[in-house]
Image (cartoon, rainbow, N blue to C red; front, side, top):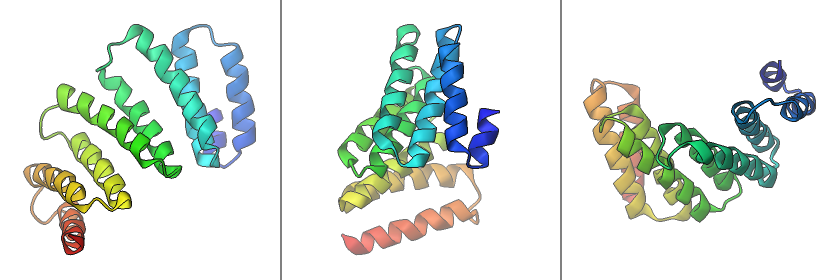
Length: 171
């Protein structure tokens, strides 16, 4: 019900329902999911500090039972990074994107598409910071994986190549 309310833009009603669910959560497993959803909701509303707070609560609970490099933490690290990116706190965004990347590199095959997403996210933050040599480094890593994963005519390869060419012009 809450997800449906979010999809149709009834954020306040969704938040009220999530709050009720949180009060009645029978275990940490229920609460951890609700905290993540509330983080997403607050980010979507532009209430970034509140979003970060919910994501931190989510991570705090998960870390009680999971190792620091558990693959299930990557989504929350990416979500937290996205909020910091929205706040233009790029060094904090990079910190969380790097945490996600580190876990992904440890837990996934070297050519997994999720690594492309991580390299791209980090590259785009460096682009916003104007650090084009770092942008190039991460986007080239993403392109290598794309070329191993898709035919040369795939739109993702063309798009990444175009972005890399644009970045090279700024060096």
